[in-house]
Length: 387
Ligand SMILES: Nc1ncnc2c1ncn2[C@@H]1O[C@H](COP(=O)(O)OP(=O)(O)OP(=O)(O)O)[C@@H](O)[C@H]1O
Ligand SMILES: [Mg+2]
Image 1 (cartoon, rainbow, N blue to C red):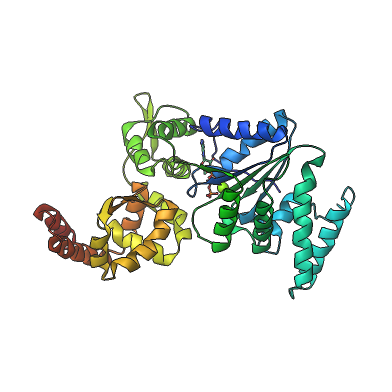
Image 2: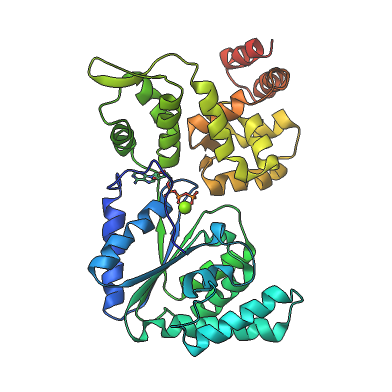
């Protein structure tokens, strides 16, 4: 199965020259026969799929076979991820299959037909997948991209874990892409095992402010004006949010040209934008979102103890919930403060609070901040919003 980035992509990629060079180098290393595994991690929408998509061209140039599968699109049946990458399971596809593939296909069919877990069948399938992965490069070097392993089925992860214990897959570049959230202990185990096996860890960071504007300009097809730049600055360099901003501005008719630039007019388009952005963070789950929504009242950055006072929960409980937001990059730690990574997300969460709740939170924030010795004008600003 092929993976592909969302529509709205631009080509070539903006601001990823260094990462592309890195991956190309690693691909060449795989050609030389040395196996390389890359753990590519980054927040939702940062461009993981786009980056690995770009490997396609390099693989073609080097005449390397590229196999890809995406966990988020292939269901949760046992070995779904690996079979998507390694087996052609459509009817009539049996020709061209080796004996291992055939046995695997039969085993998977048997599992589909009989959901009662047969340990022997699972173990045999896991063994065969591991063998297939190890031997696939016998004839020719190859690259395997397994996307969104944070959503992978457990048996596929189990195979990846076993594989890590034997070291890099010979003559292969294996790339596992993942979001840091949701946290799954079985994935953490796979990552730890591959780390011990010498895998390269590549954290895909948000785009720089310059690349953020460059991406927007390539999407609108010209220079962008100050108002749109202002909104772009709140995306925290997340390319998906950049695309969302541009697309919403365009779809709502807010994008106008004048003075040689394209810019947004008015503020009406910001309401639908908030809604799009709230959908983007829904994957964090209601508990984390509720706490982040409450935190949004305190501003772009806040002290955890103050948030704990506002919500009336122990600091430790707040931390326990917020660490998911931290891992996801929605908030970042700066000493004893947390800072929202994307002001756009903070604003969307804030605007999504119902007015009465928002006023009550501002009242509690005024009280908590006064207790904590905050300057009076800050306390007053909260009191004004509490009315
Ligand atoms: N460097 C880039 N230059 C141009 N567009 C980009 C870049 N990176 C990402 N995009 C665009 O941003 C959007 C999100 O990118 P992508 O799907 O690659 O992110 P992702 O990290 O795979 O997200 P997810 O965590 O949901 O899998 C897409 O529309 C993609 O085309
Ligand atoms: Mg992706």
